Amino acid sequence: MQRQTSTDSAKRRAGEVASAMLQGSMPYLKGVIELVSLREALGIYENDPDFFAFTGVLAEINNLPLGSNPDNWTDENIAKHRDVISESEKWAKAFSSTQCRAIAERFG
Image 1 (cartoon, rainbow, N blue to C red):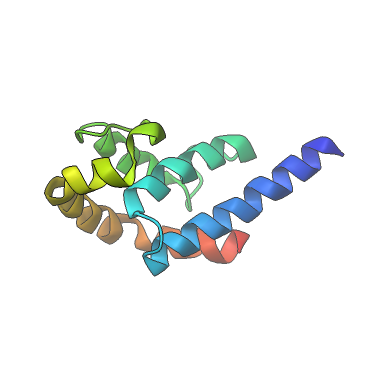
Image 2 (tube, rainbow, N blue to C red):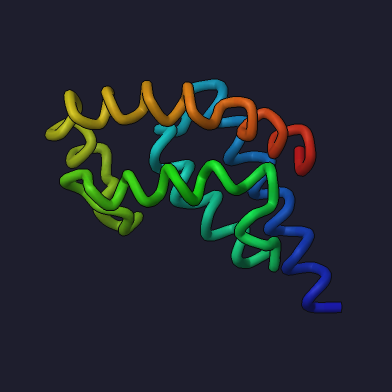
């Protein structure tokens, strides 16, 4: 029963994160990091069509000054690196917004 509750919670969170990313209430790249983590928690294969694009985006995030460690993605650090993050967010949205909508619908 505990496993099911945990899975249900992760599904709900994936829907919330994807919706927040689409609405702009969560920084898109920060959401990518969380979605990839949730994919692993849900036991979803890396090549799942809804999550696959985010694995690619995560690889690009590793090249940013903040990296893919969620602890580094504070509001202060995001503001400090706004220009490079803004460009990366534009690319990431263009690359993965369809999959983000699919996750919001699938788990929302």
